[in-house]
Length: 91
Image 1 (cartoon, rainbow, N blue to C red):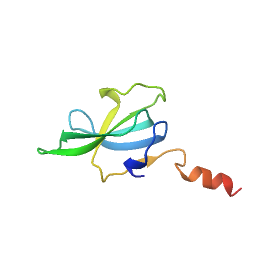
Image 2 (cartoon, one colour):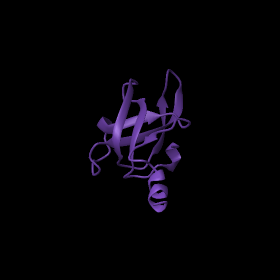
Image 3 (cartoon, rainbow, N blue to C red):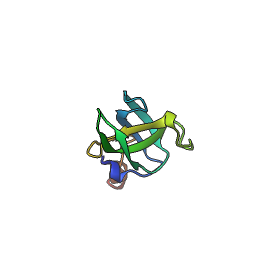
């Protein structure tokens, strides 16, 4: 799923980088709209999306729950993602 399609409250798995530049996977609820930022990325500064993903759906966006991802990267929706409605309507 593209980052630009995400809405707060969706469950997802996102692999990107944390505040130190280490690769990290966060799994849970998107607790805020994706934010387009400028960040250091392997030296030069680049545009990245910052996603706040937490196991608690009502969590506040913090440095402890963010993951930065390049705009062309995708996330993995959980709980069937957008296909859930299609499956229900075909029953």
